[in-house]
Image 1 (tube, rainbow over the protein chains, first blue to last red):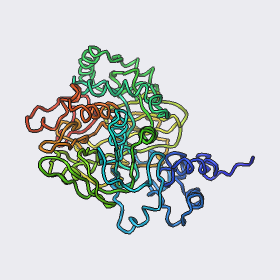
Image 2: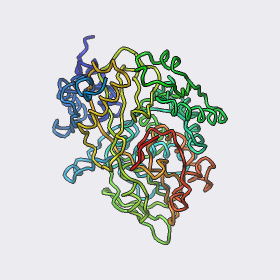
Image 3: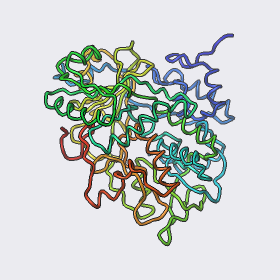
Image 4: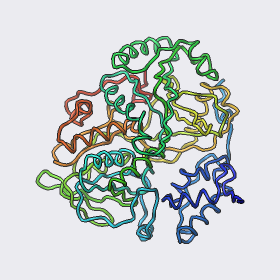
Length: 89
Length: 416
């Protein structure tokens, strides 16, 4: 059967999200932690809207009712060597 | 308990039966419980599970946000019992023994990874101190080895040689997944009838005649004769509702995670020289945090650029190859720190039925033991000997616990 991948970084499928919501991970905050969706290098920029829409559909809520987890820095992945102080070897 | 309080406007949306984690309930609060645990972090949820195991009666865990939203979901996940004092070894080795079998006990994989815990010594002086600690740890039958420079290089080939004088390796310690651990306890507790109520804020604790009578929340008032303050970053405010002063200061800790890497680091590593701790997860990410030498009290959970630079600088110093590795995410959490950095476990002074399970800095590793021992105290009225040194009385008597192997900056002094 075809898979619908929602989170490209972590290969999280629509079915993964359905199962997680059915188990009780009904907030994006907890669903994210359980499935790994939105935790890859893009930090959810690619998938959070799709995951959010599916959670709304599955839980019978408006999309606006589903809180989006706060964005964490950095905005885009940054090499530690770039952030490190110059005197670090 | 979450540091992010629910805004008033959102409160109306709450009763719409929001399932946030398996094990949490959407039901209304009952009028009476045998015990109410304030804070749905690992301490509160695990203690509820242990009380339920003892058949304690009707139990409610209340959290202002979703369970695990505070430090329980923000910590460094590392597990050891190889400390430098009788008191810490007693409590945390009890916990380590529970960690070994926790997935089976709770019927949920908490991803406990027995990859070893390496406490790095970067100077000859630190190594000499470690040697003394190992002697004490061996007397307590801990599985510890004193490693020399070459041993550490073999175990951690990517570590900068200049950072290595030697190390203490606790071979049966390691790390686990903090969210999985919270969910495991929550589901096991729910199976035993514990009610975990998310998005429920405590606004008052009623205590008359020297005993706990009630808890008032934004969802109604509950009668109870037992209340546990397991409110993490909010523990001081919660105890204050009952007129009890919990002597803690609040500090922000910051942590980061990199993009996933092929396995390069097996054990959990702590380094007092950089005031840092880190491990590589089973998904390949390098996760860790560092602390400034002199911490400044701070209740914010916003992460800072200074924190990101501190972590990047120190972790590149420890593992030079990380210079080319990208940080994906950086976050903060808050800890409540006592004068001796040990937790406060036991009865609250002056009020029957009020218990304290707070002041944690090493709360993730300590939770399984603290939960079981606090449940014993609450259910039997007797304080288990291992728990006794951690009572709040020590701040009045001055009998503080002296523990020297912590990777924590004590306020106002630099760390040995």
